Image (cartoon, rainbow, N blue to C red):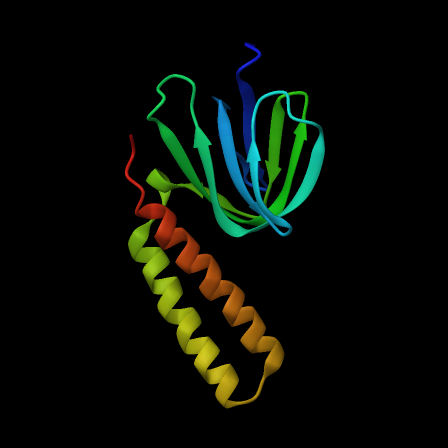
Length: 143
């Protein structure tokens, strides 16, 4: 592998969601945004529910977007591994399903707040955040 390229894998319990090379990765970690370049110092960080942006080496304008629902990212020897409960590439997101999930989460959140059910409200907020993340990532056009 070239010294200006790194490998990235996004893995979920269902298997490998993404396996490519990259020249730059932007991850939104619990501690803030992390820009990753080849040969970066080894690190591990928790991920927010957000998008992962991967600039590919085959075309400087080509960027892949992956909706990641939390998890961890490990950077080691130009090998980046993301382990998440769930993740989807923008081209694989079922938009109508994500829209239904958003509506369902909004309804559950409203009902939980009205009934003063804190735990249920927190779960509904996470479900809503995940649905919105998937919808936002689905809007990125394939390069």
